[in-house]
Image (cartoon, rainbow, N blue to C red):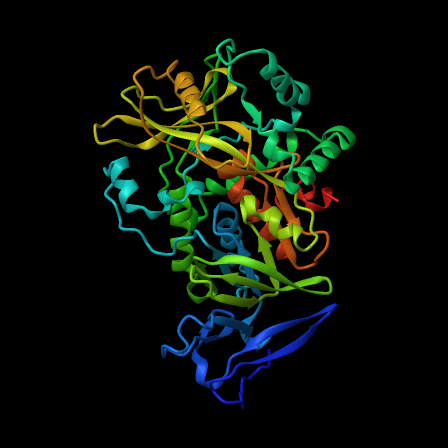
Length: 495
């Protein structure tokens, strides 16, 4: 858009003009003087927003549109847009903004779920039920996960036998009734929906390529990023991270044979994300802008660069932002967005199940559930009856269905009763995890656009790898030395 808007046409009209953009032209609304509602500085850019005439003859006829453009580069510095306000996006923002060598960098986070309101400070003795009512993040499924911080969880699920996990259960279903079955498979496939899903075909291609042709199901890559992330989480010199109270609880993980794995822990990822967001806003002032309730609709391309992001708010109003660099950290939605611009991102939405239970048995360790179905993680909060709460998590369901499978919940409860026989179910839900084709995070620059970066594919380890993944990506974006080798996580492995 031109540096200065000086409309000359009548105020009741809207002029459309074409701007050449590499291989195509894009039509943008040029909102005239009578419709300009406000012009204000937002971080690194100037925003000009329009609205329809408030009279009844214009009501609901013209959708609001906003064009956001940069000020001068000398004044604003580098502007980075992060798509996604979960653990991946917030962690990336934290380390981009902490770079002492690039104090002029400004970050905008766009997410339809991110909550930028500071919650009421609850007393330390608040019950789980009180948290449910007062902390808005609990309404977001992805903010209520298994609570497990588990750097020992290094083995990729891609090492599992395809025959045993995928094909044999299907054959058994034709010959063995549910009553005769004696066990619940930890992995399930809803083939009727998967076979018609384009994302599954792309995911399956890269999975077969990685597993059978390239032979990369090693454990060391996951171990490195898991240990690095825990190091970032426990860094005593990082005052910002250490100031966040997220209910850190477990002192290790109890295995089936009774041994304890040191280094594992548990905590509430929802509380951490909310606390991190609040601290980032407090520490960074106008260097950080949050656009809550916005859904990304399109990325705008020019030659080998992504120069703009279009988003829609809850009312259908469109905003276009310009940026120097863009980060895709949208979890399960990353694949759809990247596919639209020809960027390989084989991340699939895999469903897991969760249950919150109460028990009078006090255990200070994560509990490995029998049969390898999942974990029971102690929570640093009690219920109204002063019982210890645990978060159960488990199962891997390749299914597009969003409903909670109560058979899965019952299987989790049955497994947990081995250690917690007096348990009582408090709530149950399911969530979809962004699993990459080789079960390793995807962190780094895209192979097609020089200023587009990916931070996704965390799978069931999102809470455990999130902070380290964000720091690793920030180091690459700022041309800093990386503390761990970034090559195993680069998107270039999926060509």
